[in-house]
Image (tube, rainbow, N blue to C red):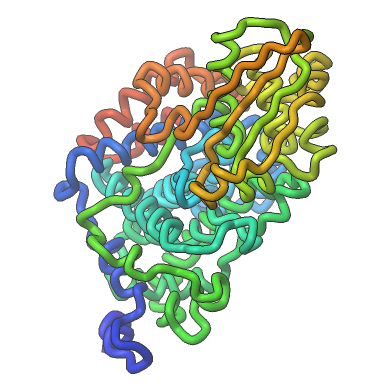
Length: 476
């Protein structure tokens, strides 16, 4: 009896484990049968993820991980982005995913509170190179599978990341990356089920790294991509994984999430309605929970263009989970000392936005952290839990209610619900192209002057490429 048939006929519940549905979906998804809007959305994700990798290649911790991989050496299977050289596919996936996430500039699902492309895209590309030849259409299918699995798991979970203690980007990314890598490697539905079962033995990703500003924050998704590429290879060799992966007696839902998961959100319309269409793209390289605050301050700055010295206080109201994510511990968020601390600080982001306007990577650099004007204003930012916003929005990326009071008594205020880059407030093509160009300038090694334009053009014609080698050459 095949793995799919065995799990589908299990006696434990009236319906098969959802791993059956996810395995069939991921193994059989076909780019040619996808709605054009889905294909466009997947291409947008691939472009954004690879753009972020260009900038992330020079971020802290990436050189150290790449150096370790170079020291290990091994089979020449897949390329490291930017840094170059071929290494075992699972190691390449680790480094490439790490650099894709390192600047905290990559996609978000504002409802699920996670990044999806950072695990799916590097895993799919590494597995595709392992396979030998992968068409652009197959890369689109693979990434679509990975994004959808991660996003659907995210919206199905009914416990907030702060309460759970996990970061869902990496925790769920193990499964999304496995779907992407498995589709790229050409797994059957039965092999895909075993791959999900194998990777379940590796699933991890804690929130403490954010609280402690650990550089593992940027490396955890890479571990997910790495484990996924190993899992699909083991499945291809006939290794049997856990079979009742999600809803079994000791399945993922009970062990990790106390069964607070809506299984219907995973199953319903799978392959017909795509949750990946609800992904957002970041205009600022910092935690998404700061973005509504930044947008609000940029609006108020235009409304009342006064100097930071004239400001008495800036009050910022967000949800309870949002407050936990980017406002505590208060001494750290008011005066961040590291880039990761600054990326997760509403006071720092708000202060920098009032002084400079929309934020860029220069604000999240060692030099940016030394700016006395930004730090002085950050000390006057007062975040709090807004009862109305918390009641209405709960675990979602929080809206922000911002009130700026000047020393002469004037007060200006506004509220932003959907930050820039959200599907209801999308970035323009020009803004996305500018982001790609900006990212290319931060690459760890000098890239061709036309790298951004070539990357945009190549991803744009991805579904017509017979081999993604052209795409990989741009990235290396």
